[in-house]
Length: 611
Image 1: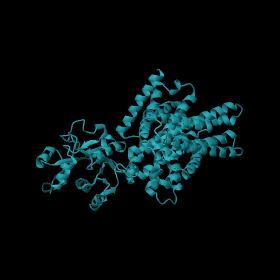
Image 2: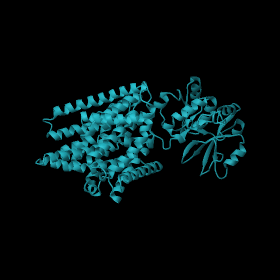
Image 3: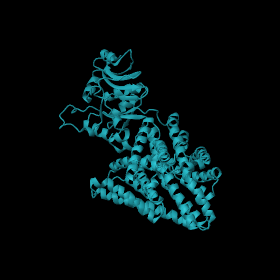
Image 4: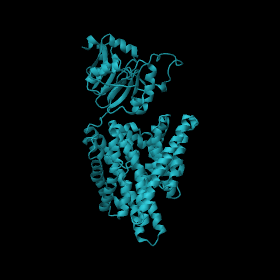
């Protein structure tokens, strides 16, 4: 099979794995690892057959990881640290040191390797990573504070793990600590100076280029892709493994500057990330042989148990002693969420190869030969760790977060953009039936009125950075843009497609929905029109002003939707609630509501009829 056919096959297999994971609500990484390993065992195809030498593969993997960390850095906003700052700092400092020491000790007594190799694997496995944390967070949708902590830790700790592994390798290379302290300190200084200096400096240059419109729109995405490659390779040329820190700083600096928007770049990189993650995990898991796994699986499982039951809980709880802004439930959740990802696999492969080369350069050194042999076993061992942690944490995280009250089983709450009297009636009806609702409006008197009715309401513009970056969307699954301004509704619907997904972003039918296409807003600039029959804002306002109230009605085979319509002829059916799928707005152009089992509908009916 040619390289083209192999890559095409990987792409198709990656899409299938991602789609199945979405349908089955499983971590996509889990299926990608299994598919890649299964493909290699069934067909014998490996990426090594198409690339000359491991150096080419490691360079490709390194570039892909740099893109992922840059994209992750673009999602890190300092505003998230208002609540999550202390635990993030502790997890990225104290917890890293504790995890490094404990992992080294656990590796020594479960794997039986030399202390040098155990320290190397201890350094590598302090990482978690956005490639595995991101899909799990999308799956469980926890509260914003918890999500911010996990996201910051995953992205910031990745380059730290790579740098720590470099320092351990320096010790191994020089034969011990005696002659290597100067080298270690110098390596730390160079890595930090180059990583922060180059990353921040490039961000400032790019900021000015974008602000002056010196980069044409059609080149922006390609420009950033090339920039990441140059920054990564250039930093690594100046200091080994400093490139990951550089691209992370570059992303964080661009995300937090105020002159220009990089939102469109983030969206492009997110799409690219899905492709890269699929290819990386399929390729790297396909390089692991069944014989290699059979040779290490027993001690690998013991090591895995030590990581899950000892290292992670101890590092989280010990590092957060005295922290007042993180609850016990949040600590417990963090203690049971530390999946390893592509950075661990890539860095392990790099240093296994480095030790083999070091042993080859010193053929008479028996100690180095033993270390190289043990390091070679780290590749299948880390594969077991990745597969085990992704499976364990991926399957445990969702039920645990719900049990601790940090996430909802099926987040189907409604975020209303708009707080007018008619919208308050609708939201109050849902709230009284036990559904989560949040209302946003710029006018304080409307927000105050909603709060007096017991509703969760916030004074904010739906198009503000506050709404996008600081509002907690935990438990919310849909946005309904319901302001009197059709253009604001359309903009809000388009802006929040990224947060809720296109299928869950709605707006009240605009006044021009029946007009000629030359006078209406383009369909791709809008959300889905909601509520049966597509009532416009003024029609809903008039209906409520005439005394309409919200009514919940159980629909069964005995009392059907047709029976409901016959009873309440002028009712506006707004929502349906399915015990399995949860609450969702009725699409405007759906005339018949499909009944699958018991269903509750929520409608505006005239007050005397709804009494």
